[in-house]
Length: 122
Ligand SMILES: [Zn+2]
Image 1 (cartoon, helix red, strand yellow):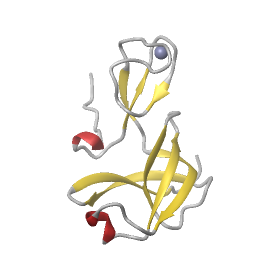
Image 2 (cartoon, rainbow, N blue to C red):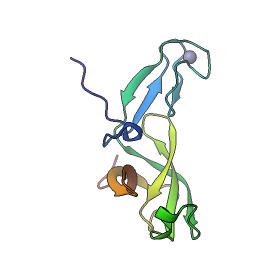
Image 3 (cartoon, protein in one colour):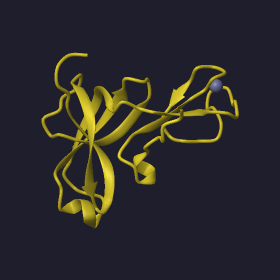
Image 4 (tube, rainbow, N blue to C red):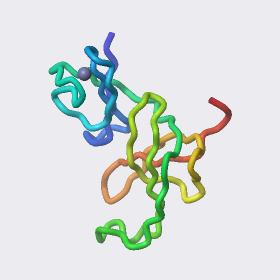
């Protein structure tokens, strides 16, 4: 049984990533070949949405008119539990090293991942 993979870049409320069956590489942006070994059959998987904050930056000047209404806001780089890194919006209280989980919010007409503190322990 193959479950449908939800990918927010394609309108779904989920985070997708890819892995390479040949060399074991893991990456975020979807592409047709492995960026490490060039294998042409990457496997797309569903991420749990859990991860750890690697870096954070507060954005005071929004780059677009749609985002201006939300500024200042926090952008975080998150190391996903599955081994890839992604950039997303996050709760302003997040600090480096915090364990987080993504939920999906509507921003400027799109569903985007938004990281919040995760409950409990990993
Ligand atoms: Zn590979």
